[in-house]
Length: 613
Image 1 (cartoon, rainbow, N blue to C red):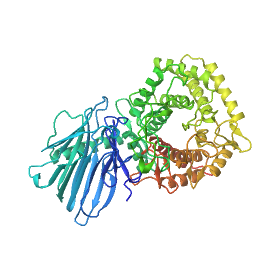
Image 2: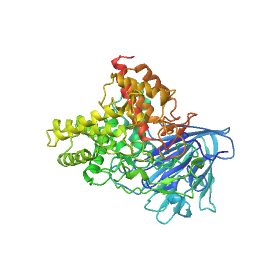
Image 3: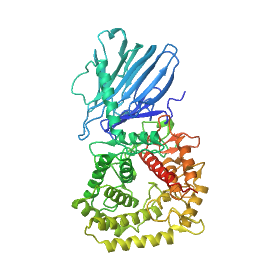
Image 4: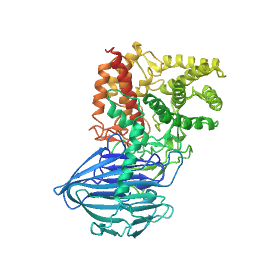
């Protein structure tokens, strides 16, 4: 039996500073603490023997398991049905302080018997610091403490006065805790796993458990009520919004790309990266999507995080901005390999940190300026300090936009003249000009206009390939690239331009397979890595928006509806879809859910206009 669950067979819970994955069999197999980018406590998803886990499942009898989210919340419920009864485990994390980083986090596992009686087996087996640090375990009548020196995890048991007969607890030879627990209909038990606890294990009564459940549900429902989306795909958009909120580090407003590291883009392959950081590109898209959903406060928080990054930027070979940062804004992301871990289903190497952090990717400057301009249109205006920093960014870009770079996809095949980098440089200058004119702020607008117009002519001269009848990935090549699906959206080309229609047709014939979209063809454009990859879900949603904008609304709707069938049972998406429809890559991925939101809004608007082709 394969010890690794499908990537899709997981739900995400979190407290706005860190997060955990819970598989459909009731196992917490990924949890970093105290932050998203901290070392792991549970990571059996990447090594089932050495990674650590926390499992709750029926003992000694067959069962079926199903998962759902408590409606309009981030509370995950796993239901177990056996011959003797039905029970469910509610997993959630009460929100941490929204403005202050803390080491104290609570992962609550509430077990409730619904019908009959069910015996559960519980195993808590932490493996601190990516399985590199051993721990001791101290058991008490109220719970246990797992102590790894620099990190501890405290287990508080939910107990009532008569519970001595319900549970049998022991410490194993690996300093793990194993217990058996029998519940009858109406019983509510479980435990709290707490990091940074300020005292020893304490008894938790069932009423306190239920109160925490209700408070957490109220928090999420109150937050979601702020959404202004009333379109046709409300359930999927709402789930995407909650997922993005779960991946937001509240003290700074930063949204991580994904809560996981090392999940492969190809099973058994080497395309395994650490996504627990904040990309400037994702940040910029997040501002746009959050504003479109009416979440102005979140967009403002993220805008402030972005402003801090471009305001503190210094001249360097890679520019005033790094492509990614940690959630606290620091830029030390040195990449290392965890050689002692076998990787998900043998997918090695397992990497932490990210070696692409030092790449030159010119497109991020356009995404930054586009998000600043979008925020401006929604009343979030740049102050004097911010404007001065932005002019410095554009001055640097004016001297560097015509350089080869690594491109949006962070390939490791060397620098080239990527069309998308030029396109977004055009966006950067265009939005800078608009901001200066709207705000009446000083700046070398004539110089920016000259750069913008030169880039425009260059893309039409060198980015358009007459033989392919399409805009291509990089100059002097004939490779197609789905990043260019944004050309019409950003206003570079009219959505009715014949050359834009031709580009969409070329992409459909080469990059689209039954509605799913590849980034590019690695065989035609070597990226320095072995193996292949699946279709990119964010590209598929971008294709929906491009089709809708070009008037192909019926086709766009069909592609969108097909794409929704690839969502997990909980409405989540990883980075990619594999050949058999499986989720691949880090999970869930923020960029995919951002693109889903944008596609749904674009499609709603196109359907309301009613002009279809």
